[in-house]
Length: 435
Image (cartoon, rainbow, N blue to C red):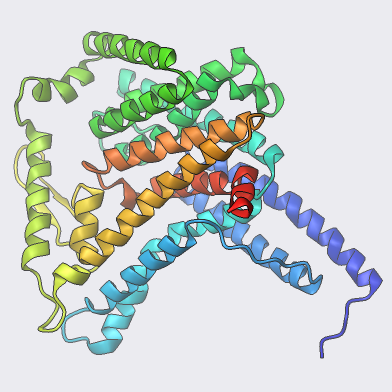
């Protein structure tokens, strides 16, 4: 039998437990800031955070203070992981046999590794409102700097990467990743702004003259991302957030949005370049390419077979087996995704994967809505965070009709970190006990 730890050993273990808990808090804050930086940075911090979490777990087991609690959304995430495994298993390399299929299955599950941030952040943030009050400024300050960088990048044609995008990319590698992250951060900023909950943040960030410019910086990032699908999702999300606060505020937000649209049309040529063809009822090059990719995805879903027993309509062609589409036209390129979350899910993981993916999306929305409704009246910060994440999640889902943002690493690392912060709220713990 394992010997019981002595009082001196217990004291040392408790000391290490407290130190690691403080370290984990700083890692979470650093991770929040890193979400607006190149993807290598958040991955490094996440890896260190997971190692620290494992050591914390071992110490808690030694102290017999370990208590298992399954985070919300665990079941749909686990089911989607199983779907990826099964789809990869039966979509191995031709003539590779079971070994090849198993290798592909494990590689397909590896695509889901970004969800690790959800579980790490859930246990790191759990029931700590003080920590969330520090996380939010860390998120939004770097987001605002990224937004300002995107504005400078576009206005002065200064591009970090060798490819000169029409859109701004902030500190990230491409416009889709940048737009997805900014959708979440800008709607979180708006929620805190409209509800006045920013006065619950840590330090001087609770001051109006400091927070408002930060919020505007995040909104600028969304604007200068120049992604039409992101604009669409953001517009609906912003109306949702404002409408939840008051009908009067909703009308003001709509009016302000119209003013921004008009000013942007005349002041920013890129707005006309992105929206002109659509407003004139034309199918410009970007829309034509998207339709071409969509048709290819549908054809892959309908025509591909795995073998005589397993049809791709059930399990798809495989999470990593989407056939690249060669786009013809002025900007020749090869796209390795369906340019839509829903078509990508249907094509690569079949009907089963599509159903489970929709379950995960709707469960995320439901969870955010429950947090908003169940938060106590005096939990202004929790309620506002929940409302902002509800708007951001809906925004990504709507943009996902036209973009494969679910497959963008930066977006998933941000989205599931925010969802972890949402599910770790005290209001959720009370709701679970109440049920």
